[in-house]
Image 1 (cartoon, helix red, strand yellow):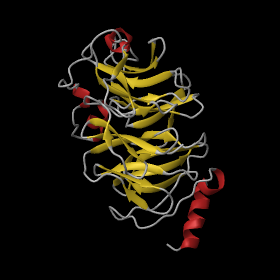
Image 2 (tube, one colour):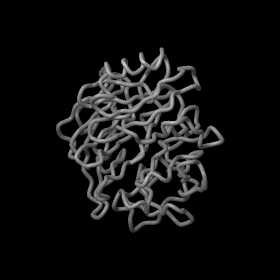
Image 3 (spheres, helix red, strand yellow):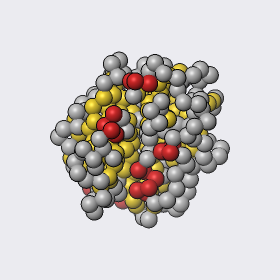
Image 4 (tube, rainbow, N blue to C red):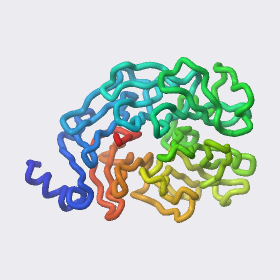
Length: 323
């Protein structure tokens, strides 16, 4: 396809005209992904356990080994928090100054809006999923945030590993079921995470906790005292205005893995995209970036949230978009 045909295809898709999405489409071989930005913002993602960044001029490999996951840009876009061999690390946006942050096995991290803290999920004092925070330089003990009852108790020993944070294998549903990625709200007051107090009455749930008070609200509940359907909700992400939150859902009634969007209270729920879409993050209010099935592989894909138009960007998964 020549450059003229590419431009025509993107115009038909509606993304260049309606969302300001800049893409440069190249070869679609397994590791020959196209350089791209989303609304002129760099993206980072994972392929084969390696973290890459695309800044519109090419794809840059940021990690040397293949044991990395769940990158997240810092609020100023200069750093990335990520999982390295199961613990939280931080590096510069160009892959420099890599250092460990968490003192224990963790789930996918999230930055506080002021860039001072990183939240992550790990084994709590209750024996289930909990949320901790630690300074971005590491070197200090992590502070428990949720459940609130753990705030005045000693954290479990570092050697104990929560089942959900073990290395996951199996099919897509099995890998996602216990994914413990968390998301800090843009105003810094709340954190969305898998589990919470709702697990006392439900089989699986997704909660939003108030950082100051420790109060929790379940926004997605399965089994037990929930909606009567077995399944799960995982990998939350906030829209920049804090009014919307999205997460990946699955139910055992025949519904595939999908992306759900709702108000921050869990109301006004609706599905975004297609079956087997997952891990969506926002790039502005009109554009989502998610992992989708494309050409038999997982691809980072931009979705116009108004029209549904889609543009594949890179082979990979677990996207994050710079602010």
